[in-house]
Image (cartoon, rainbow, N blue to C red; front, side, top):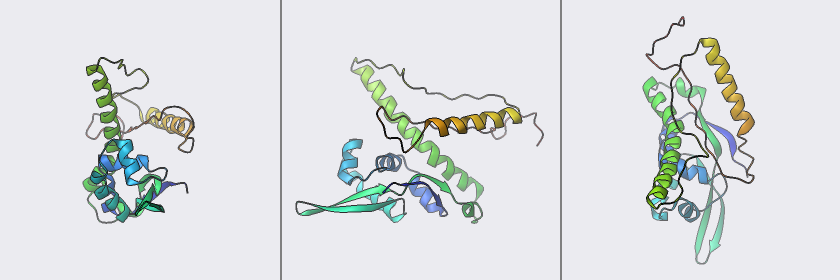
Length: 198
């Protein structure tokens, strides 16, 4: 069964469960059914370190058991993410939570995954340098910048960015090649100088 494209969440505690780099990495593995041991092998971690995270995510309704099978004398559970992405339900912002709580959770869900991916990739990059292996980051891009846009330019850029992601990143296309991640955040900086009318 394919995960949903998005699952709307109306409980801030579910976002708190999502807001963890290890769980973000586990979720990425669970776009297809896998056992705890299978995920542990992919992430090069001991399975005992992952059971706690799997239990939390299952209780929060982020993942579910999609198959059980007998392996010797043991029963092996295969888990799968319920969705490829998670977003807040409109009810969440009206649920009496403080704005800073919602902002922290929302930013964390997007950026913690990017941070975990970047740290893993850069660790591999620097380890290859230490081992005297070729280690140029030539097939990716990494950086942060700030620029000035009029409101019209910002709207046009955001539209182009959304269209690019829609055109180039099909989550259902699991063809050949290497899996790449793209994280984007484009917004006017809070407290920044602006000559635009409010």
